Length: 92
Image (cartoon, rainbow, N blue to C red; front, side, top):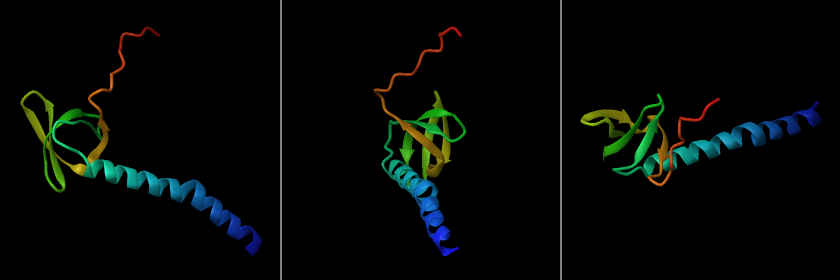
């Protein structure tokens, strides 16, 4: 019984736990390095530009003159200014 338990635990660790820990570490580093002027995607899908950064919160401009205060952990992605958005004119 012990012979089957050790490989199962190792498999569980390398396929599930370790990748999840690396993903959390990468997201935390991204959140800590966010700066004013960067374009971000929030966890609810909104895209905006950061106007102010505090320790736990950030002010994000989602439309001209519309600023919302968000918790920094709710930032899902930081987009580079050099990224080109895909065109929506492709016909299916």
